[in-house]
Structures are given as C-alpha cells and as structure tokens.
Image 1 (cartoon, helix red, strand yellow):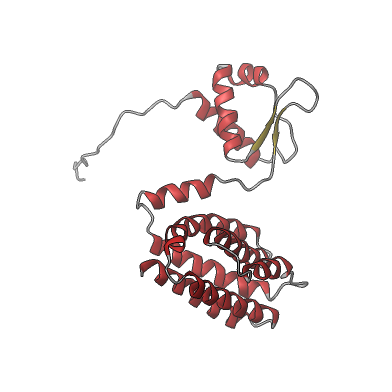
Image 2 (spheres, rainbow, N blue to C red; image 1 turned 30 degrees about the vertical axis):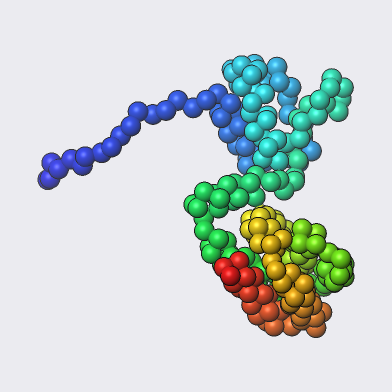
Length: 242
C-alpha cells in the first residue's frame, strides 16, 4: 500500500463574521420553508438573544438581506414595523454583473452571446402564450418612432422594448436576467450613441429592426422572430465595435 502523501496547501480556517452567520441562518429558514413571503422576522433584540450575537451584527445582516431584496425593513414601533420577507427581484445581480463587466472579468462578447440566447428563447416562448400580451412592446415601439428622441431617451425606450418581449415569454426569470444584461448594454451603448455622427440614420435602422421583430411576434412566427432578434443584437454589437 502506497505511503505517498499529497502536498496540500491548507490555509487556516477563517472565522466568519457574526452578521454573515445571521444572513445564512435567515436564508436557511427560507429554504426550509419555515419563513415565507409576508412573514415578519423577530425583532432586533429577539434575534440578538436567540442567535447569541450583538444587535449590531443583526442590523448589519438585515442591511445585507434588504440589499438582496429578501426582506423589506420598516422603521417605527407600531404593528407594521420590523423586517418582512418579500418576493421582489432586486438589483443585486445587475449591480454585480455591471461591476464584473467593468473589471473585465466578464467580457462584453460573453454578455452579448447570453443576451442572444435569452431573447431568442423569449420570443419563441412568447408566441406559445395564450393570450400573448404585446401591448407593452407596442407602446415602447410607438414612442421609439418619435423624431425628437435623443440618444438617452431612445436607449431607455429600447431597453423597455426588449424587456417587454422577454416579459411576454411568461418566464419571470428570463425577464429578470434580461433586465440585468440590459443594464450592461445600456451603459455601453450610452457611450457611443451620443457621439454618433449619423445618429438619425442609426436610429431609423434600429427602429426598423424593432418593427420587424414585433411583426414576426404578432404573426406568431417564433422562429423568424428569434432570427431577427439575434441579427439585431449582433448588428448592435458591430456598431459598438465600429
């Protein structure tokens, strides 16, 4: 029997901060189903006593959980005060994606590839919905055709259009992921659109592409819509490179 012993790089175990333990305990209760949406957490003093940590650690944990949109804290001393478990999609993932993209940990090419996959799926899924709600996308597109739109306003409506067709898929996670990715794309496009010398023609071309995507959706042709939206996204990426 071999007596070979591997050379392991074992570092001392780092002691976790107390507030991190509190966050994990609350998350564990949610995953176990003991805490549900609308439930009110025990007060700060109660949590401090039951978990054996300082009230400062409890407060820090509540701030983290609120930032993650897991709880909503209400100030005061009445029956409506305290921290309540909520079901909201927050900005934590979007903020993290923005930072990692800015730091080149995630490239724009990777973001664009994932966006193509998400939107292609979304439009194919959308045409299977009954009823198919395209009113938000139509509303955004109607406003996109305005001749007086500047680059910043146009980008906001462009984001609203793409988010609307993802929401039409009926998949809430797809819509959330799209919203997070659009923040990155919006930031990047915002750097080139205002300085574009051919802004009017660029705006007209992008709007026409949006019209074609919506027409394919209205016709119930998910495959064509997926082809159009992928081509539109890749052309937008090429504009970024120009």
